Image (cartoon, rainbow, N blue to C red; front, side, top):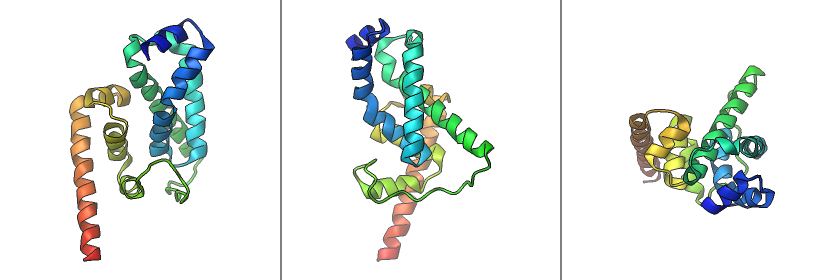
Length: 170
């Protein structure tokens, strides 16, 4: 990936396209976890890609490209949410279509959707995307201790939800 980043920095469109393609699934999962629908996720991803192309020279170290692009995406998603709130749209969470292929495991996806965004996003970045707590800290611009706390609280909420569901079925 470092070689692709170096080529992309020299404004090689093919290298940049290949680099983005390698990150597309991660970008989609992250955007979908924040925004809940495909259209908004696609908008955020498009804006992220454009921003990355224009500002690739601002990336400090090639090895952190994935962290850098994810951070930009999270900021674009938050911008989109703020714009929607400014338009006085409802704060209801839309139903997710059954044919959604965002996550392979439907139960995991349903469990994550039941969490507050601050826990869901951290859990998704940690468990699904495989980021370290230090990287999540950089992406979300928060102290690493806050990331660890949110991971722990998110796990607790998932555990409580799981226990509650088990009690209902027994």
